[in-house]
Length: 488
Image 1 (cartoon, rainbow, N blue to C red):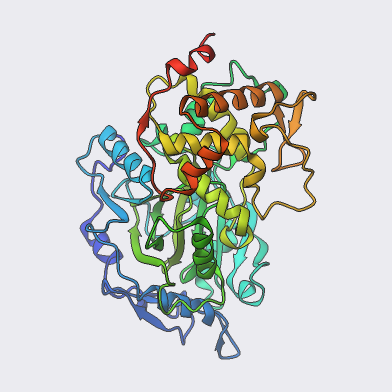
Image 2: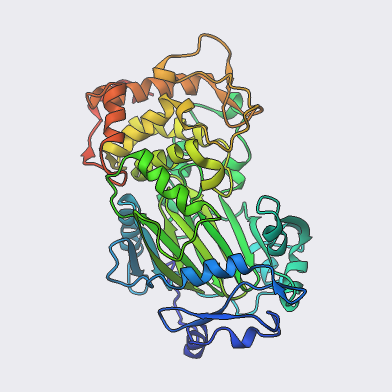
């Protein structure tokens, strides 16, 4: 099998990684004297976030959140919200299909031993040899700064400085978005990325990029590295722009607190209010907020996590950890992408931690590719969601988008076409241009899809509003209805 490790690492290593006491070896070499610890339901003891200033832990807010997170149950194989998949012994296609089905139904997937772990100690030489990461200048998140000002935790630094800082107990640093443009969704999961396989692979010959100026995010920000010192906490959020997220742990470990609606049929406004309470940094999480259920997924080196769009989560990194991850889009999770973008339109500045550019451009090309999907299944609510987002883009502008943005883009509203202008500015960036021909074709195909499903705009909205947000719907066949668009 291409993805699972062919030879298991030494057993004593897994014993160390999963031992009960993960805290003592870090004090005082990586964490300062006075660092408190917490015991998790699986018996593991970890450090709490700590940076001491004048005898006081300036990260006490983070430490309190981790204590509350440690009170949540550890996800097990009996979970109905997180699928636990063991890669060893599975064929590539079976492994890929299991992950696809899990995401389609709005659940997270944890894949154990999905890859061979990296070394216990991460070095700059290893990062360069394996991932092309040099001692580059990057934006570091300083946890002490974040404690002072939640919105401005950044400072310039280098990867080498971050690694050297592991031995400085009086600081906590991490790098959250080390660009890895040469890496994409790892084998054997590459074909789950329908944006790459279909949106670009199926459309660029007929709709070239000559009249399109996509944002670099569309190609360069699909994969990134995460490098954390020990004891770093990330507050509840979901990843923006309706994207699926994957993370694989190269070295160290991470703990994800995964939050789900207790009742997935609540109205969108009710759901937004529930998640608003979760993401408010002043919320007391000593009890899981009303309307939510939560559990903790624990991943070690070699394990991998897939999260569907709109999945709210918090993350704790108790050990020095390097991970790589990325985002992608799927036809099968468009109902969740639409839900995610709707929530961001209401409270994006609170719900998300980073904005990706040009998602609308990619969604249009996914619609343009629909008539040519001879082997990719489509599902009722998911395809309705995709067409709705393309036809009504103004309804999905994230709150994070600048209010000074030029709102010239009007194409697609209700399926109406632009009367002039060869290229149209998108709502995501003043400088990014979309091919008018591609816009018009996406609108035409989207309207044709909804007509084939016997839906007008109000009925399409009802399909999305009046059913549980994670309901994907039945499989649909659109071949004959879209025959006119299949002529080359």
